[in-house]
Image (tube, rainbow, N blue to C red; front, side, top):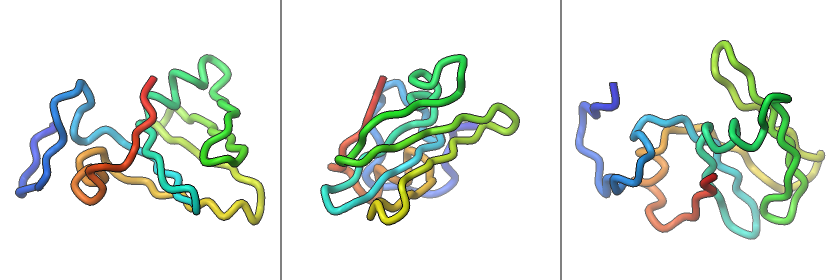
Length: 102
């Protein structure tokens, strides 16, 4: 269920993203960006792999199906941190942070 059992402020706007959507966040010197799992899956396609550049760093996302997972692979010493969270939680703590949507 997407129902939250405790108060959250600020609550995410109704933008089509479920509150409990899993999100991977990349954080570095250039800032942070939140990427919902469905966005990663859409970019990865049937291969399950998405190679891209985020925050000026090469990033490889590998999608798993059972259970639904997203593995983030970065070059050693990239200076980018990875956080796994839910959409509502990231938005509550970082309401002005950018999101990568499909």
